[in-house]
Image 1 (tube, rainbow, N blue to C red):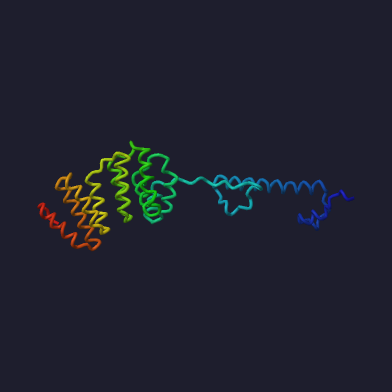
Image 2 (cartoon, rainbow, N blue to C red):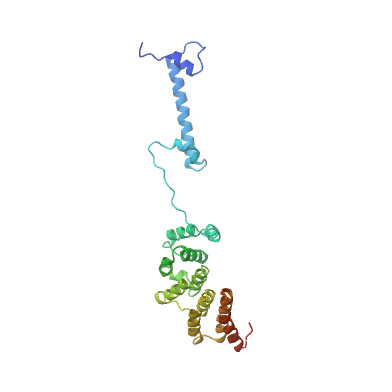
Length: 250
């Protein structure tokens, strides 16, 4: 009859071709058992993938039919991971993390310095505005002028004294930061290393009217180091004479 199950074919599939004919009910029960065990195995594998005990890339074909893969949210790159990325020169990773975290609240100072370096190298036009906006939202978490000076040091390490100066002016004008002798020393050293004698003289002129002799000497020493680094020997010699005139040795 057309409705009857071809038990001989099922027997062959089950490896029973040399056995006696199998009752239809028994054959169907055996097939259903196999399907049941397959379903259980499928569910177990899905569970292992879901809880992270088994890598999904090896079982992508077992993803639910019609389902969409859920992308995990970006992790915050903080602590050792960020420091490692910054030290390895992977500034794009640091900048991506900064974009995710800059509005999420205060960050550790070393994290902020890594972000400043990444901005100076990859997005200089954003540096001053974004750092000022971040500091403004968490004023109590960032003591001043210590934080501003730490960020200036990070920026000048990227050989961008112009960006450092712009940021310092913005911190003073928009955040009310009282810039100190250390701020001027950082800028003098950075502009001297860049060979910008005019800018160094401009900052020195402001400093000499408001700073003690020891601060002036420190600034001269930093300028000497910077000018020697870039080969400006005459400018370095002038400041060596100035330092000695203050009774100090170089």
